Image (cartoon, rainbow, N blue to C red; front, top):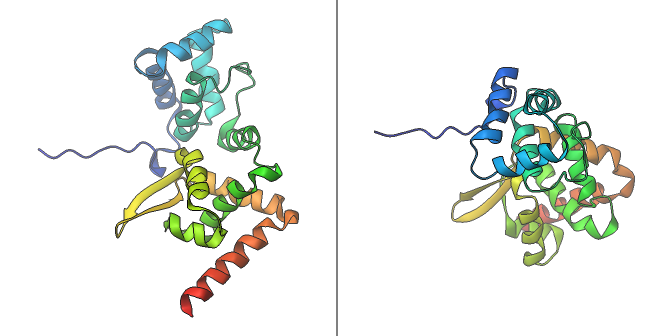
Amino acid sequence: MPTQELDLRASQYAGLSREDIKKYIRFFLNDDPDYKNAIRQWIEERNISEHDFIEQVATKSENNFMYLRYVLPGIAKGEYNDLSLKQLPDGLQEYYQIHWERMGMDKKPQELKVFILFILVEIGTPIPCKMMVDIAQQDKYDVQVVLDNWVEYLKQQNIKGEDCYSIYHASFLDFLKEKRVLDAERKLFQEVNQRIANYLVSKMA
């Protein structure tokens, strides 16, 4: 009998009810084989009760499953060892901002990472790695490293035999578009658009 895989990352599961959110947090705490021990250790080190952890993380999630998908594994992996429960990000947009800052995305050496992400934003549809290489005028290896660094935020699919990438979730796309507005003075985003235009013209020639 065929079965249908349930993809909880899909947009229709973004705004679950608070009770659904709390059940999911309990699953991470009690049943998830990969993360439960590390998350329990994190809350025990901070003398937090299970009830308070569930309630506060549920509130911080703003009933958005994507927040839990990122933050709970992050706690287990030690990404928030320097933070208290109250210091965890409030909502997805703050989560993205903290992650952006921790990866040093506003620093000059990270410019290629920003460039690749904004190619994905501007194109808007799944595109192969080779197209990003041509637009960015960078080594394929360097572009692939960027894609691998952001893999949890990207959707990878095989189209006509090529691995293609796009932004996985609308909330991250919205965050990147906001960054484009805030950082426009760096001229990087105008350069992204110019490179895309040059690439398209070269393909039409």
